[in-house]
Length: 167
Image 1 (cartoon, rainbow, N blue to C red):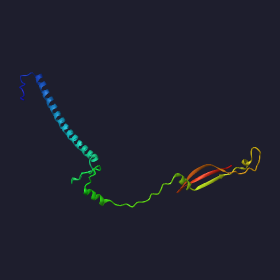
Image 2: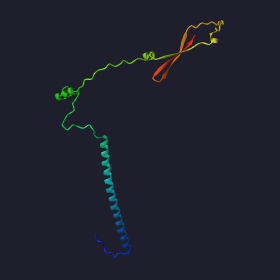
Image 3: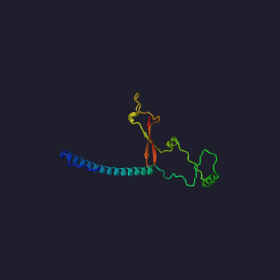
Image 4: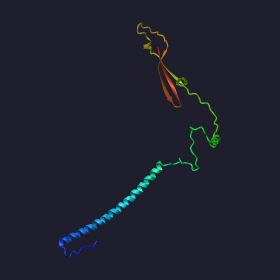
């Protein structure tokens, strides 16, 4: 576009046109910088998207579950038709394992019965052997009564402590 001859135009209009031209040049320069920055940012976004896809592929992609290139297909366990080659290879890979007898688990009663027992007996004091009714001092021992049992863990085994009180 040609620039018009400004000699015939008043001075204030000429000044106004010059300021508009300077403003347009400044805006054009700013626009060029912004377009350059936008193109840099677009390249950066593309790089980041590529990195994200690579990371997702590494984390969620196939690893060792790959299809064999020779065209081997997965066999269905629901079908009765087993290929002969597959049947022969299964026969060759079977290994006979010797059997063993598993020991029967013990019940809680058997475990408790096999524990060592420590017996604690508490005898009545002399004041407790006197009859409160008649005052007879020769009360006889008529037996003992199990008051309580407790289990104590000693290294390598467990002991049962039985506490008896005489009657």
